[in-house]
Image (cartoon, rainbow, N blue to C red; front, side, top):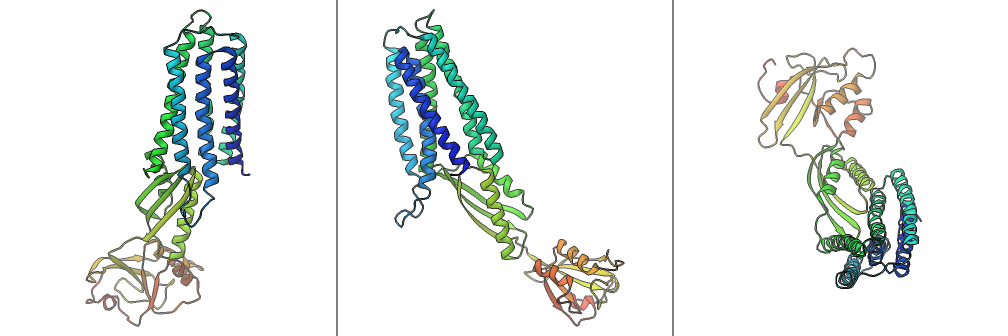
Length: 392
């Protein structure tokens, strides 16, 4: 069993032990606040069980349910939450409309509750440590949830201690704990209903996923990112624009993005990514030159100048043109590869050359960048560009 699932099982078991212990103390003392706190711990058991049930159900698919049975846990959680509300109502009614009871065995109950906080704090610290080691946001959230359980125990201890001098102190404590119960039950129902009606995950999660996607330099734009809950799990639909040309490279980038999202966002079950190349309304051309007057060079890496120009798809009109110096001309070795890398970074789509350099270093650079290499017999740049000769 993987470490994350083991910790979820341990968390559920510890919650179960606490429910039994608090229930026993409630009978032992006759404290309504302790009974309410037992119900509050029961909400944590339900939360832990729904996660475990979701993990189990996520692996069960059939022809009748090809998308899985994730939402069964939401239905079970809602039923359980209503049951908890009913218990909270009965406790609240008993608290408000009954006489104050004599609380028995106060000292030993206070000590027992104080002792209960020790495994809670220790487990929360251990779970937090493991969460940081595994980089698991879900375990980290559960560790924080454990620490919040110390507060209602403190309220109950205060109610028990106060009942020595004020008979209604236990009632006041029970009402405060009931507020905790109602809040926990509301959160269970709210999250489950949102999942059942395919509501979006919260905006913080969406923004976190967007930050992860934008951290990849190849991503030019996020066209859409939507995510929904199904049970405890998240399903993501992502549409992005990439500044890469090769389908295989785009596929690898999409896989890396999906892996990064799964690592940072808990319970992401499936990510459907649609990627498309950056849309351009022009093509960028380049050709090596002997001089700035536009004589096309026989060489590539040894050419003193490179002409670069853009043409619109729609009518072939020139929208930009430039002649740049070859900064690698004086290098003894590797100048062709360096120049090829420069043109790739400049976003060139088509390169015209006179000499075929198939099998040489620059050809591999251009092949990886999916740049089209075209041979030409034309001697002048202006002829190649399709208009009369004039100096740049």
